[in-house]
Length: 416
Image 1 (cartoon, rainbow, N blue to C red):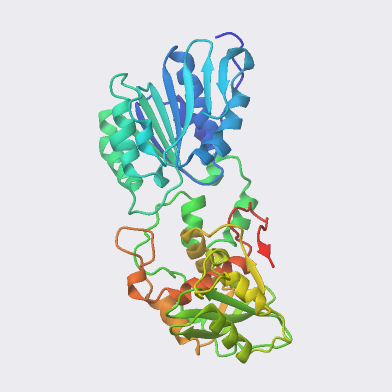
Image 2 (image 1 turned 45 degrees about the vertical axis):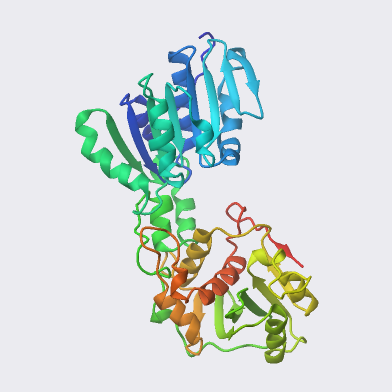
């Protein structure tokens, strides 16, 4: 096609791009340039095979639009575009080829298509049925190719199984795999990666920046140790009181702390059986005077929930009780909460920013005994020890600036 744009790839990206193995698996750290590589792969496929269909698949439609749509439109010369559909995220080239961006949250809607090429971006975060039951059959009649690109998501995922399978099948010359760290991608300077190390726990740093498959089995609070427990932790009434609160009728759980420089000191806890939010608020006031500034960091779903059994929401009750409520605009992802607590307990530089007094017996029990459900990345709630962990998690998320939806160094939350 006339007017071919001059596109450049860094060395690691080029290693994957120049290889023509039919099925390729790339595990890469954050900001490697995965989406840029994805779009160039699709564009090459559409040029080489006129009149064929190529998919870019992401875990959700929103991710496909936010991650790749604008980039794809920038890469495709306008003179090559026959038509473009902004709502369907579809570009038709003048040679008859189609490049379509798809979310896989409703995988069954993708059935029935015949594909000549496919990129699965962040494949680890898709359901395995998306590949095995929907997209793999779509490649059969055209003998189409597929490129799997993702940051890893533990060793209990189908993507890890695919990674291992790829090693066994490389001799067949049908499958090939690569693993690159963020630094090897060449888009992020080493000092920026080192800065991120201080904001993540060691396991998460290895997973997100070093492209390491980390085992999520075992303890949820993997970074917790006796070094996080200190009898020297005391309340300082002159400082604002911080409360992490988990809305649960039995028990209603809370932990109490203060910020001391860049550390969070937890000196007390609360577990109330069969309690309403009103009763929890009364107990907080009984323990700590409203003359003191009290900020509650609760479960974000309390903006809509009414565990008190009356018309007011949980957050409204807290505000009516005289507390400032600090919460994000949308609920946290479970992995964000787990990662934030572990980072506070021990970050990648070896610093512990979370200290807990030994009187917080239920919280310490939670940190020591809460484990993952088998073969999942989810804490096992059946153990009954997750409530104090959740309360601490909401507090850590708001205090250590790891808020949902924000970019690095950016805070987005709602304060009443």
